[in-house]
Each structure stands twice: as C-alpha cells, then as structure tokens.
Image (tube, rainbow, N blue to C red; front, side, top):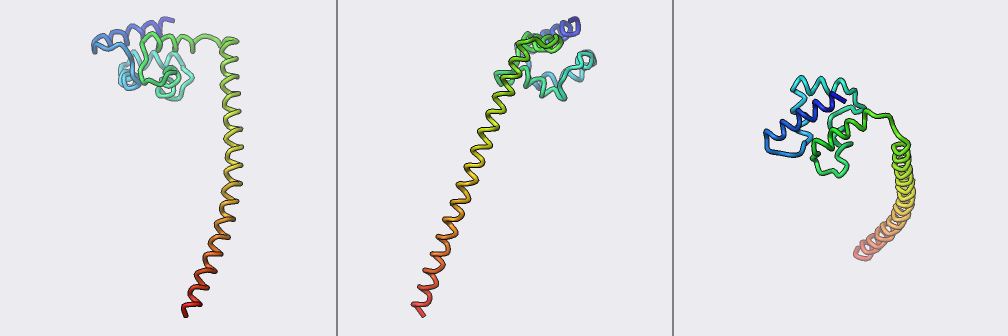
Length: 141
C-alpha cells in the first residue's frame, strides 16, 4: 500500500539522519507531530487505541525496538484480511489464556483453604498462649 511505503521512506530517512537502524516507541510518538505521519496513521484506521498498543503488538520479542521493515510489515499484515493461520493462532492464544486462568483459579482456591486452616491453627495457638500467660500471672500473684 502506498501509505505504508511513504511511512517506510520517512522512517528510513529519519533513522539514517540519526545514524540508527531501529525505531523506538518514543520515535513514533515524536513523529506524530509531523503532519504527513499523523495523517498517514489516521488514514490506515488501525485497530489500536494507542501507539503503545500498536508498538507492543509489533514488538513480539519485547526488546523495545523495531526495524523499519518489521514495523511496516506489521502495518501491511494488519491491512490484509485474516487468514486461517491467524484464526488458529488466536484460538491457541485464547486457549492458553483460559488454561492459565483456570489454573490460577484453582491455585487461588487451594491457597484460600490453606489460609483458613492456618487461621484456625493460629487462633488455637493464641488461645493456648493466652491461657498460659493468665496462669503465669495468677501464679505470680
């Protein structure tokens, strides 16, 4: 798409000027003050609420930097209709999340039972300690 090609050209030039090869989130935020960049992103109508969300989506390795190619390839992928592989990947991700949440729920339930048992044990221990201190005080008087 022409808009993405224009953004690639812009970011390549901006990074070459700074003698760098990767984009950071900060770079994207700063470039939004350039009308061409802002208008280009607006015209793409991307499915992200914020630049941070978009950057995190593209930065799969969580290194905080993207090559211009990785960034523009990500933009182009978003412009294409979803494929069967996309649906499969989403299903696997959601399935993994459901399993994780289920395990966390089970761990939470187990932890709650253990805390209740500990609370019961401590209540008994404090009652016994209270009796001992009262006996001690009585014997001293």
